[in-house]
Amino acid sequence: MTRRVIITGLGPISGLGQGIDPTWQQLLAGHSAVAPIREFDASKFACRVAAQIDGFNVSQYVPKTYRKAVKVMARDIALAVAAAELAARDADLVTRGNAAEGATTSYDPTRMGVHIGAGLIAAELDELTAALAEARDERGGFDYHKWGREGMTHLTPLWLLKYLPNMLACHVTIIHDAQGPSNTITCGESSALLSIGESLRVIQRGAADLCFCGGAESKLNPMAYLRQHMTGWLNPNGNDRPATAVRPFCQTAAGTAIGEGGGIVILESLETFRHRAAKGPAKAYAEVLGFGASQTLNPTVRNLMPDPQGRGLAAAIRAALRDAAVTPAQIDLVIPFGVGVPECDRAEAAALRAVFGDGEGGDGDGLACRPVVASIKSMVGLCGAGAGGLDVCAAAKALAEQTIPAVINCQRPLDGILAGSSGPRRQPLEHVLIMNTGMGGQNAAMVLKRFQA
Image (cartoon, rainbow, N blue to C red; front, side, top):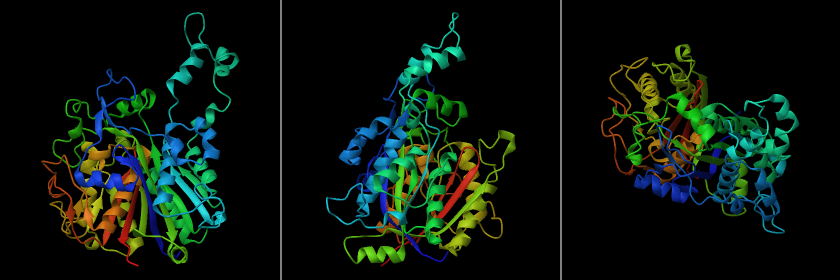
C-alpha cells in the first residue's frame, strides 16, 4: 500500500458546465446554476428550483459504434458516461473509446479499473405509467395479476437495464475497455467520494494502475423529486430568488436545492503516469494523500441528519488526516459537504471545530487553524451521488491553480467557520480536505496535496 496515487484528469458535469474549464470559470465567477425547474411541471411542489444541465447530449461523448446503447441509458448513466469521457480527454488518455484508428492505448486494459457512485435511479414516468395503466382492476385499483399478464408487456425488453445502479460503471468499462477491478457504491451523497477512495486503495495495492472514479446522479424527475421533498432537506422559500436559495454555513440557511450531474476523475499510480508522460502529453493536478470513512449514528432521526456533534464526520476527517500523515494545521482549504440544510451545516461545523479547534476535542469557539472553508453547493446544488466527484474536481483544480473559488450566499456566516461570501482568491495551497456525508449516515473524507513534478 505504498504506491503514490495522483489525479490526472477531471470530468465535472453540472449546471455550471460540461468539463473542467467552463466549470472552473463559473466557480471563479460565483455564478449559481440554481433556477426555476424546466424539466417537468414543478408547480405543485413547495421547492420549484434546481440546478439543471442544459444542452446535454450524451451521443457526443460516445464512439459512433456505441450510440445505439444510448437508448438504454437513463440520465444518470448518460451523465456518468459523459463525465468519464471528459476526464479521459482532460488527462490526454487514449482508450478504446476515444482512440483514433491504429492508435496505441495508454494502458493495458487489464490494468484499468472503474469505481462509480450511483443513486436510486427513478423510472421515467411516461414509460412506467403506460404499463401501470394496463394493470388496473374494474375499480381502478392496481392488480398484480394484470400487471404480470398485461402491464409488463408494455415495457421494452431492455427496460430494466436503464435503471440498474451498476450500469453507470458498466457502460464506462465497456466504452473504455477497462477490464480491471470494477465496483459500484450506493451510499447516498457520499457515494462519489467513497468510490474515489476505493480506486485509491485498488491502485495502492497494485490491482490496477489507473481508475475512472467518482459519481453522477439526476433526481430531476417527478418521482425522484418527490422523495427529496419528503426528506425535508429542500428549501421551500427560495423560489423567488433561486440564485440565493442555497446558503451553506449561513445563519439564514433554510434548505438546499437539487442539482444534477457529478464528476469523474482519473487516478493513476505515479510511476505509471511518469512512464506515460515520457511518451506524450500528460499532466497532473494533485496527489491523493489520505482517505477516511465512518458511519454517523443518529438514531433519533434514523440517520436522516448527522448527529449534532458531528462525531461521525470528525472520525472520517481524522482517519483521512492520519492516512495522509498530515496535521490539521497543514490544511489550507476545506471543500465541505456544505448543502445549506441547517442541521447538516451545524453538524459539519461541529466536526470542523472538533478537528481544527484548540486542544483535544476543540474549544467550540472557532477554528484555531483557520483553513478557508468554501462550499460549491450554493452554485451547483446537491447532486446526490455525484456531489463528491464535483468537490474533488474543484479541490484538485484549486490546488493546480493556487486559487480558491468564490464563496457565495453566506452573508451571515456561522460563528468561527468562515469569513463569509467572497470573490476568488489567489493563495498558496498545499493541502485540501474534502468531506461528504450521506443521507443515511455514511461519511467520507479525503486529503489532496499539490502536485509538483
